[in-house]
Amino acid sequence: MDIVPVAQLISKKCLPCEGGVDACTVEYSQSQIRLLPTWTVVDSGKSIARSIRFKNFVEAISCLNQIGDLAEAEAHHPDLHLTGYRNLKVELTTHAIGGLSENDFILAAKIDLLVADRFPTAKHVTAE
Image 1 (cartoon, rainbow, N blue to C red):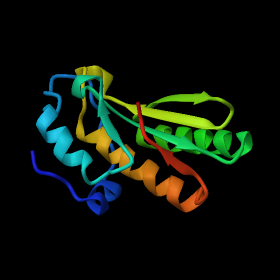
Image 2: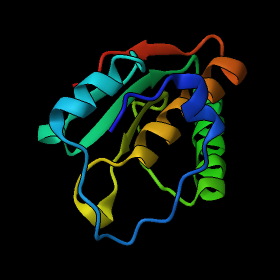
Image 3: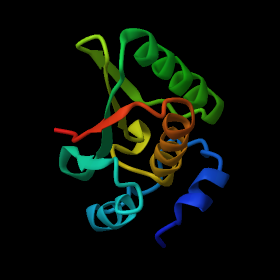
């Protein structure tokens, strides 16, 4: 599997995954994530995560809802955690294969674009 530039990830659409394919290797995921610097490989390479701090609750909820709309359009759904009224953690994995697939990197790139375009004052927080 080749490393995919961010512009190409954004131009792709998530494909349905019902299992039967191998998850990305940890080595591949670590290489691909270098192109998405706000994300971190977590859970022993089975998922990626990003944490974002907003200026207030209204912005955080707005972003959460917009990520939800994007995820629904892509038919690939992240885990979203809103804590401390303005801190949003986004976690991506492909549940059907128990690890990461290209879909996770596609959606991560699209989430980055959404946050940068619509929430310019949002702050990246280093994922735990």
